[in-house]
Length: 116
Image 1 (cartoon, rainbow, N blue to C red):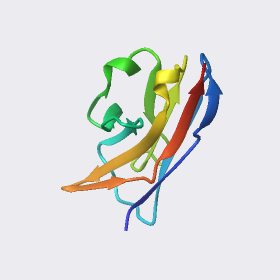
Image 2: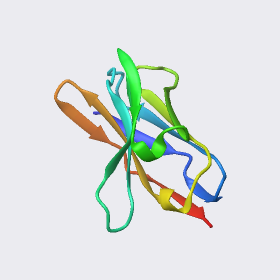
Image 3: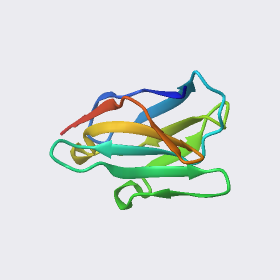
Image 4: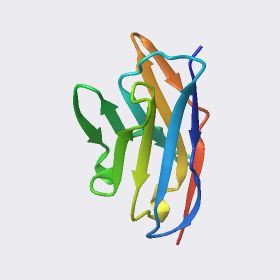
C-alpha cells in the first residue's frame, strides 16, 4: 500500500520561501512521475510541477522561475518542491501525487498560506 506523506507547509509572508517534501511510506515502488498539485478554495486542483525520471520537469505557468521540483532520497519515491518569492495567490493546499503503472496515489495535502 502506497501512502504519500507531505510535510513543510505553513504560514509565510509574501516574498518568503518554503520547501515541501513528500515521502512514500509502506512501499518501495518506484513512482514516476511524481508531482505537486495545489487547490485553492473555490478553485480546481491544478498542476504545480511534475518530475519524471526520463525527461525535464515541467511547471505550471505561475510556477516558472519561482518553484523548483526535485527528487529526494531515495529518488524513486520521494520528491520535494522548493518555493521562492511566494505570493498571497499561492495560498492553497498542496498535494503530492505519484504514479505507478496505471495507479495514481495522492497525499493528504499540506496547507500553504502566504500573508500579504
